[in-house]
Length: 284
Length: 309
Image (cartoon, rainbow over all chains, first blue to last red):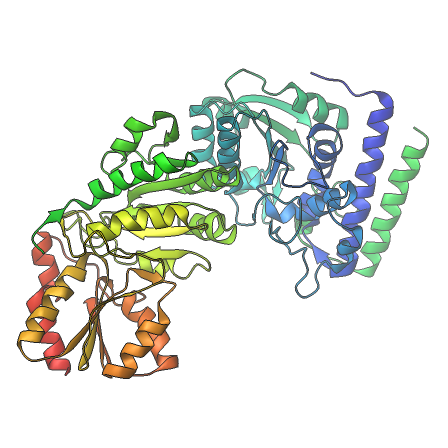
């Protein structure tokens, strides 16, 4: 396990505020978007791309790179933001969100932008693809890792559990899954729509090693990811407890902001919310 | 047409040959390695044979992920379980992501004649050919199976190929040229065009011989690649013969006949007749008798063509 210095932690928090600002920038352009999951996973994505993962933005198909699979493809506003800030593509593209033929569709397309590894959107696909990547990287003799973010509502898809069984059967300990447990899906509380509890026991029963963290605590995200594999020969899952729409005060922890049709008043509030976050960080 | 060979065995042997040439080729099994013809590959390349058990949705995703790292996965299993069941994985993970994965549906068509409609595959061509960028191959004899495996291994992009299970008559010699997307003019003729594909190409060939004895100058075409279609060969046949009959061990909805009519209705509309299974769950029983139930035996093809003339 590695530890972050205080300076590194503040820098990452500032970047995650910038990511939220970019997410808002895209919504301003397209007037709507899946902000709930983008904002709940934004801190994990920030830590992954700015501290944890091995990438070369100028050489996106570098064979030794770590891979990232956004299984819950609708959270792509956060992915577009980190890729743009990391330099995979020009930030001005963020302003095309929602326009005809934009390279930033509502679910990511690997053929449109450098840095995107998979075409996801239909739920329950990402973990299998990531498992295949992990297997292929191991066969190729590289030590690259594969990171995945999945939504907790997505856990109801049976195909995930096929992937979970295969990943442990084939001992893919270069595979690290974050479950973005914001506890809400479109129609309400996830455990009331289709319960996944006991979640930790489920993953353990499928042969995974499990950690639980606060998915908005950069330090915890970093320490968990760099501790993986938690057990040799086992794939790792990090149950990241998060808040849906984290950072936008009017939308936090509310299922009906899974997909946000933005009003001018709400956008103004989101601007104020981000300014407040940045102001708080300026004193750190 | 004296010799007949086991299509799965032929596929398995060809895959070993392809594997010798290209170390990136890997085989993926869904608890049916031996039945899918992968036994020799597993013996020859144990580290390149991956077993996943009965999880065909997950398998297509894993195959896509493996392909992103440079592997060329060959997935082989019972046809409906790698087409109808994981259709969305086929469309999104292989098609939309344009991954270099080869899916082999074996015991396709009515092969599992006595096991009933869950195991028969009469819709695989219909559903898979809706996916942009996926090549769909249905070879017509063991020589084509072997050559198709090599062509598929060299082709970059997702492929669906189907094979049956009963022994297939050898129709072609070793000099036979197999090119993806290029149909085969087996016999020239001016009166009517008979187009066969896959397992029942041999029945169409037999029918053509019988028709010729009856004085019908029949043109016989083998369409081993249902997508992309050889439009040039087909349009010319329609122009020159004015009548087209298609023969396939598949539903009439969405199969070879549909594909050909989609083409000809735009480029050269002519009267057409489709021979295959109509809109129903097929019956069960001995394979040859099932073919007869759906008009796919040689003499029945002859009768259909004659009544259509």
